[in-house]
Length: 148
Image (cartoon, rainbow, N blue to C red; front, top):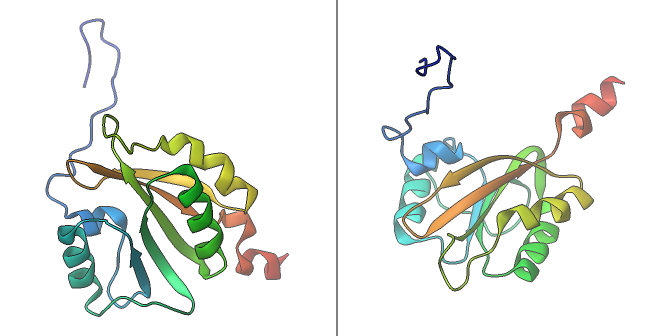
């Protein structure tokens, strides 16, 4: 795509054909925990994508957690980090800008970095919620450490 000056512009990606569970990267048979008010539609979609129920304990492939404040986010990051597989993910879901309980997701990034996680994706969940995904950097994953 080019603008009027002939400069190539990045195309805006169209994800409208994908479910929210697909956008979040949920795969069948993963061990996923969902916590907080993420909305009934997301809970249903994730459960359908997994083909199984949610877990409440043990090691996790992923977690999708609604938070209403920076303090809740810090607690969630600490709580779920210790249970995440090195290849796992933690989606922190917050209210969108304009909501009285809006949480600026950029403020979560330094908290995550302190515990060895990086952000690598954001996603609109629905009209009032969006999420930011945190993962273990590839360089810090167990397989890379044992290969060194």
